[in-house]
Amino acid sequence: MLPAPESTRLVTIIAHVDHGKTTLADNLIESNGIISERLAGTLRYLDSDAEEQRRGITMRASAIGLRHVYNPPKMSSGSSSPQDMVIHMIDSPGHVDFAAEVTSSLLLCDSAILVVDAVEGICARTHSLLREAYLHQLVP
Image (cartoon, rainbow, N blue to C red; front, side, top):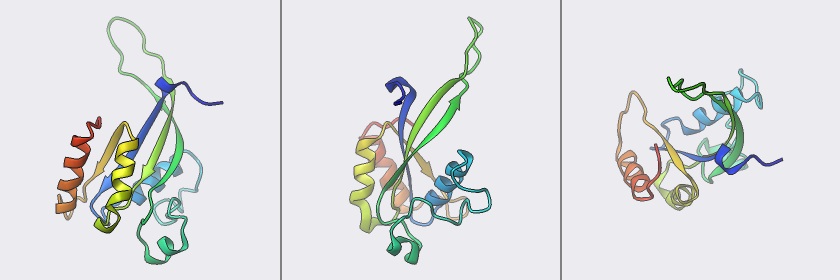
């Protein structure tokens, strides 16, 4: 059974190459019980192509549907009950050679998660991805 449209979100993960998009995706998949905690971050679950696994990079955007329980903030005017949501998450490539895949995923989505490496900080590709997400009027 498909969820109601107001309970569905389309989200893409964007970042500079090797900043942890696929690791984040693996950990979110693990939180849904699809893969084990031991494999999260190393399995590269959404990199299903043999060439992606061999090279250790994402070359094609891949999607998965995840369940999430949204607990809205408690407002003084009444009670807020938890809401079941479905998050359709897209893991996009970070390398500039696959920019068309990233653009396609940004055009599909309601919002984007921008991942920034804590050590390397904001890189050139981070700037361009942020500008592109802003141009597509994505919600943070």
